[in-house]
Amino acid sequence: MNRHVRLGINIDHVATLRNARGGEFPEVIKAAKVVEESGADLITVHVREDRRHINEYDLENILNTVNIPINLEIAANSEMIGIATRYNPKFVCFVPENRKEITTEGGLDVVKNFKELSKNLKSLLKNEINVSIFIDPDKEQIKATKDLGISSVEFHTGSYANAFIKNKNINKEFKKIEENVMFANEIGLNCHAGHGLTFDNVAKIVSLPHIIELNIGHFIIADAIFNGLQNSIIKMRNIITQASI
Ligand code: PXP
Image 1 (cartoon, helix red, strand yellow):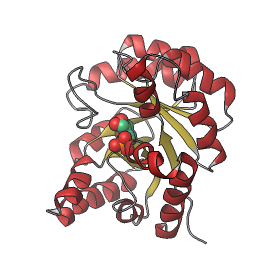
Image 2 (cartoon, helix red, strand yellow; image 1 turned 135 degrees about the horizontal axis):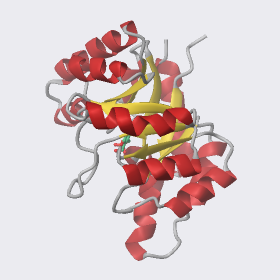
Image 3 (cartoon, rainbow, N blue to C red; image 1 turned 90 degrees about the vertical axis):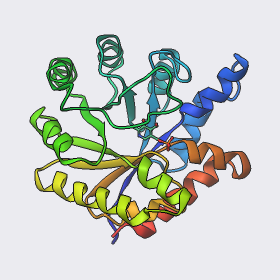
Image 4 (cartoon, helix red, strand yellow; image 1 turned 180 degrees about the horizontal axis):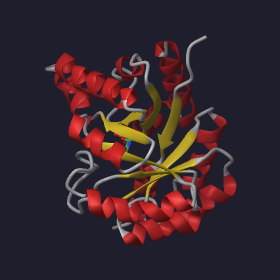
């Protein structure tokens, strides 16, 4: 039997669309329920400092309504850590944040921010929240993440996804992920991946046997406009299952 790769569906952009009009549609909670019913393993949301999509009310509502775990993405600062410890999701992923960026453009620099991360992590670990860090595929970042004493990394697949779009350097970008996933696994880190993943580029990432979780958002919400959220998630789930060895 193929291994089960956990699939987290990021529903931030349902809230982006809602906030475009400031009302309540499309309802984030309805999307969360569809994600659960479609067989995804996690609901992933990013509460950004500028609350441009998901806010605390959405987070609370999702936590109170669905039964699958929440993976909360946050910047590693005291305000956001406070939100994480208040709501206690099962998973937290630290991501870098820059107000001017359109999306999370690169991984967190764990080497540079080691001291602060080490301090900020404590209350999450005390609450038994599983913490991962979103990093670029880079050995020094992996080693620093391991030294923080956390168990998981999420590899930023954005450069690989962009290579796919341009049909240029796909193998080079893939090799970078492959080598770093192998290294992270060797030193005992669980390997997750995400960013820019689509029906076409996901199988290669899943073919890496140490990848145990994927978080996918923008493409799924975009595809859902044409095919319906449930169909888009089920299609992604099937591609992942078939590519899992
Ligand atoms: N994983 C993390 C840590 C993210 O911050 C994001 C969103 O930027 C994703 C996965 C999902 O990326 P996308 O929306 O491109 O699928």
